Image (cartoon, rainbow, N blue to C red):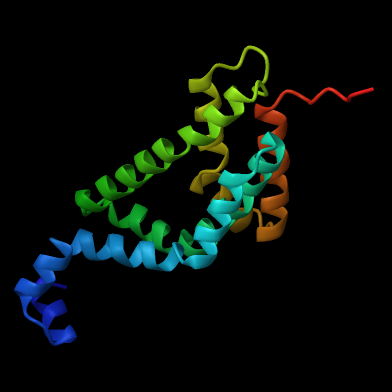
Length: 173
């Protein structure tokens, strides 16, 4: 589909489409964002970022990852396949993963500042682990390939994040 075809279907000028979205990739980005980032997502992110307990904060990251993957999994499977013939779509996926990685730094810094990162686990490695565990491929393998429910994935992810990144909190006597 061309920008002109999109404009015609939307009953606007092609210049309007270019002004708003810049390209077909821009349109795709907007569609992906609208399918995922609604008020429920924003509320979940706010709850996670406002949690002061590191374990609670990590556990709240799991439903956010689930929500994103549930909403976008079919679209990103299509993007991955289309990226073979349309390099700009492969580049879009790389950009989105880079952005996801950048946004996760805040979580890891909060864990470090709370003194709760696993002993010997540096900030970069912790961020890599967090990024990998919350990634689309892990979700796809477990939910789509192994037929886990989204809830089972979410519960596993929450436990895996806590066990992989946090040092157990000492009980007070």
